[in-house]
Amino acid sequence: MLRAGMAAGEGLGPALKAVKEHVQQAAARRPQGLPAIQPRLVAVSKTKPAEMVIEAYNHGQRSFGENYVQELLEKASDSRILSLCPEIKWHFIGHLQKNNVSKLIAVPNLFMLETVDSVKLADRVNASWQKKGCSEKLKIMVQVNTSGEGSKHGLPPGETVATVAHILQKCTNLDFVGLMTIGSFGHDLSKGPNPDFQMLISLRQEVCDKLNLPIEKVELSMGMSTDFQHAIEVGSTNVRIGSTIFGERDYPNKLSGNKAKDKLESLVAH
Image (cartoon, rainbow, N blue to C red; front, side):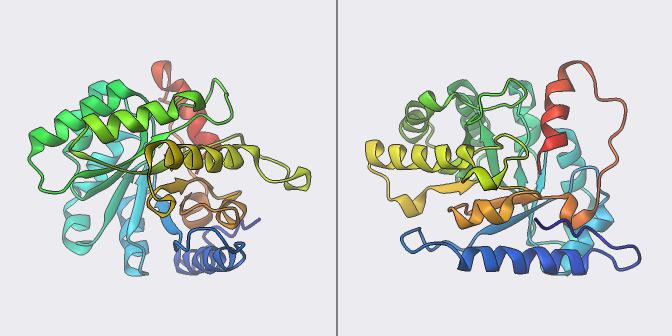
């Protein structure tokens, strides 16, 4: 398990390089038969300042993830990031409430929404993206609660196929690109592969079989700082890594009320 983090005085360059090397090594260990998709590294910059995003960008990182809409909007709109990071690609990886959809759609350089967890949310995002008038569709993933934990967001697994079918048929401004899960935290690999990852792999197969989709066109977003190498080995195409690159986070004490569930999810994720 890689827990390098950012060493004092070195900046984040060495940590980012080490993570990228581990991503490539894990991809090389995949068994034959898995789609030959080079995993995408999403650097999760939540609670970290714009300066650190720019530093990672200068070291070649392009995909970044955020958990909270307001923080993403502020960071992505920062004049320094806009001018110094023209090729940045923002992923939203936190729980999205319907009343925040318009704010999310306004984010500059929004590349992907990984956490669509209901038909109603898909419809709201679809309508907002259409209103924005973009020529390209918005890339989205469907989030599945594979572990069944109350502290995690996502669809029940049994609703996955119907939700994806709805998006493909009714949400013409959205580009369905894959499935995402957080899964249970701290799985002991000595007991076998992570069952949450195995469930997402099975759900992808079911989605592809029932909706006639090529398997290489449906990504799997699974794996974070503590388990990304195992996730890639079993087929993840998108890993979300924060503290291993940027160092541990300082959470404000203000998060309460309806954010409690999101905070709990954030503490174990990414």
